[in-house]
Image 1 (cartoon, rainbow, N blue to C red):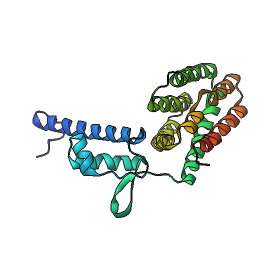
Image 2 (image 1 turned 180 degrees about the vertical axis):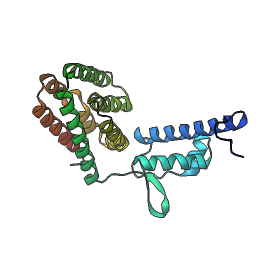
Image 3 (image 1 turned 60 degrees about the horizontal axis):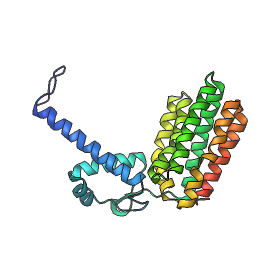
Image 4 (image 1 turned 90 degrees about the horizontal axis):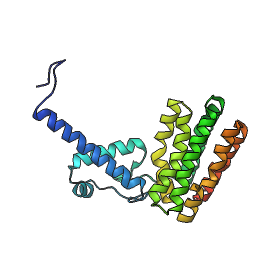
Length: 229
């Protein structure tokens, strides 16, 4: 029997609901992390039974998590409905970076037009220090990728445009898969701090034209370095 409007759910029903939600979230986070850190590679089959056993959850819980990851673009239904880690074509990767460039270019324009331009430049330079430290300390790949994307995420956050930020975050999963799938030497070069520093410098100068040109070069180079171009 459903609770009446205005009533509260308590006791075993609430405990069961909380446990169910926690299991779904745990499965979702575990699967998303496995994909975006390269434990599952593009094209790998995602079997409900194997995943359910590994995570000690039900197949239904795994199915819900996989359905959510389909919506994020990390999982794709292949032949006979078999779910696999999404595998982007070279054309799709180039389009992904074109959309990133458009979003981040708008972020640059809005940051430079704001009265907080210098503070934004300093915040980005601080993010660059994290990126340098990640490479200098030979941190795990996942940490280096986080530092790289963290710079670009901060750029979007500093724009103050919430729709821009949400749109960029919707691309984050596929971006991680592309980066994790690239050859090590090419990937590290694309993520290196020297490729990002001119962006912060252009913001500090207030040169929107130069900033967008630098961003375009950065994105074009990234596609080439990742072995897609």
